[in-house]
Image 1 (tube, helix red, strand yellow):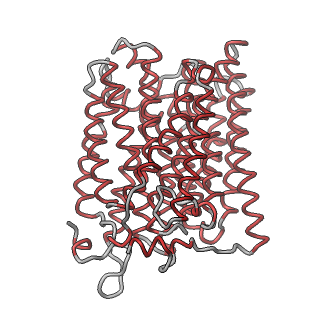
Image 2 (cartoon, helix red, strand yellow):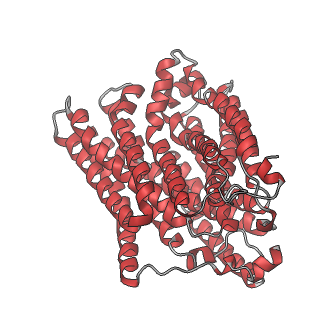
Image 3 (cartoon, helix red, strand yellow):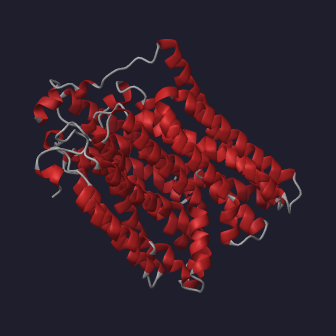
Length: 503
C-alpha cells in the first residue's frame, strides 16, 4: 500500500504543507508507458502478418484475427473496465490488467500454433481494454487545474504517437530480430517493460478514494457488451465478407444500445449508479461533442496507416522497416503538436482542434497528391513535409480533444467516461481500418493502379476527418456565441441522490 493510500489521501490532493504529492508525475509516466504499449499493439503486429502466416501455416482469415481479435476484445472491455475502476479501485484494476497484458504478451511470443496465438491475442486485448480507461481516470484523480491540461497533453500525445509509430516500430523489431522467428519479439518486447511498470505502479499509483466507489450495473454490462460486439464483429470480419454476410448485426447492435440507454436512464431516475451515466452527454460541457469529434476523426485516421503500408510495400516494394520510415515524419509532427497543444488548450480551447484538423486534412491531402503525381522515385521524399504538417495537426487534435472532453467530468465517473470515449475511438478505428484498405483493394482490382488506389482510399479517410472538422467548428462557433457556458454535472453536487447513496 502506498503512503498516500494509507493515510486516506489521493495524490491529487495537497499533502502537509499545501503542496501536491510530487510522485504524481512519476505515476503519470508509469501509466503512459503502459498505455503506449497497449495502443501500439493495435498496429505494430500488422507488418509481421505475412511472416506469421508463413511460419505458423495459417490461412489469411486466421492471421487476420491476430489483429482484429485484439481490437475486438479491447473495445468490448473499455466502459465496463472504467466503471469497475471507479467502483472498486483504479490502481488495483490497472495493475491486474497490466500484469495480464505482460503474461499474455509472453504467451503470444511463445505461441506454437495460430490457434494459440489468436487466443492469446484475444486475452491480451481484453487486458489492454481493462487497463486503458484507468489511464485517463488516474489523471482526473491525480491532477487539478492547469496541471490536468498538461497531463492530458502527454496522454493525448501517447494516443496519437502510438497509432502513428506502430508500423515503424514493428519494422524495426523485425529488422533487428532477423530470422524466421523474429516476429515473436514484437510480443516479447512488452515483457521487461511491463514488469518494470508493474513494480513502479505498485509503489507510485494512488488508490481510488472510498467515497467515490459504488456498485457495478451488471445488466448494463451485458447490454453494452452485446451491443458493441454486434457493431464490431462485422467490421473485424470485413476481409472475410463480414459486411455482406453479417450486416444485420449492425441493426441488432443499434437496438441493444437503445435498450442500454433506456436502462441507464431508468437507473439514474431511481437514484442508482449506472454503468455509463447519460448525464455525461447532456450536462457535462464538451463531453458529447468531444466524443463525436474523436470517433469521426479515428474513422478517417486509423485506416490511413494500413493504406500507406500497402502502397509502400506492395506498390513500391519497400521493406517493412523502410515503409515505416516513410511515415515517420507524421509521427514526429504528432509528438511536437501534442506536447505544445497540451500547454495551449486551456487558453485556446476548441479553436486548437479546428486548426489541427485543418492541418491534418491539408497535410494528408497534400501527401496524397504528391504521391500520385510526383516522380515515383522522389515522391516519398517530397511527401515528407506534408506528412509532418499532418502530424502536427494530428497532435493538435487528439491531445486537446481528450483534454476538453474529460476535464469537466466528475472524478468519480472518470473511468466510465474515459472508457466510453475510447470505445467511440475504437469503433471509429474499426470502421476506418475496414473501409480504407477495402476501398484500396477495390480500386486496385479494377485498374492495377497503386497510385490511384492510394488517392481514393486517402480521400475517403479525409471525408471522415472533414466531418470531424465540421463538428468541431460547430462547437467552436457555439462557444464563441454563448461565451462558453459551464454546466456542472448534477451528479457531482454533494447532495445529489446518487452521491448521497454512495456516501
